[in-house]
Image (cartoon, rainbow, N blue to C red; front, side, top):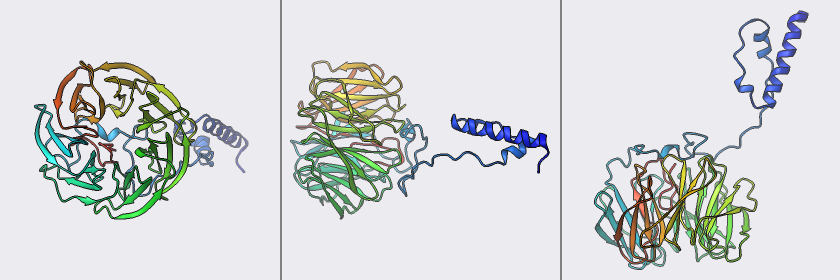
Length: 395
């Protein structure tokens, strides 16, 4: 048995450690140094709640407090460093992709593709851009190193395209088929089809640990929660707004909140992805559509297609802080942020044009004519280690 004085000190130290653990400060206790303190430190630590396991095979986020930590200016993957900087614009009504040189704000090439191209999507491994020819039922691959289009791949109803964070599957948002189709990310061979009861699956984003993703259902005003590994729908809810029409989905930098743009509710739904409880609506502007996170992870840009404006949301303040209006109006839709973070690129869906906007001032830098019905344009290359799809969601 320990001498009384040492035993008393040990018990007091153990009690102190337990109290500190209860306050979440046990990890901050000073290192013990000799004597009674050393013996006290050898006592079992208070049990801690284990963090849920992430998706196996997924590259972990660089910073647990910021899922976008790999997306800073200059952090280009070696895979993309030799690619020319371009903006690829799918023209839904023209069945083409306009290629813009961002240095000159000029269209340098027009690529014929399939019927009704909706989005240009970077592959998980960053090596290919996939053009989603929705009504042509094909994906056209573009080599971003050369700009050359390859042979189209047959894929039914590819409205949008995502990739699981482990790179194992491509996930086709088959909007009219009412399906989520898991495919080989290279050959696009069908691996598993998940029928859904909602209508118009179109956009998604993944949890910070990749275990699940949230999907918007445009035409039935619903949200889905999907288990990534099991490839199963594990949650479904109707949005509390008559005529809701959810669009883009984006997770917050800290991984705690999902944001869902809604073009008929004219705002953004704020959702707890883990609990998947009823979200609250944050009004932004008429026709809220896309969601794009700034390179420093401090703000999010929200184009309001129905009023020609862009709302700016501050994550730290948890509120909208600015609204930029396009001169002469416009229909800002989908797009992305330049590699250096200085320019927001957006398609003008109803005006056959593309907008380049200064992210520091909100000033319109250029208004570029393109084909009819420009939609999900991709700015490429962008920083990041791998792509989760859409017009460029990188981790």
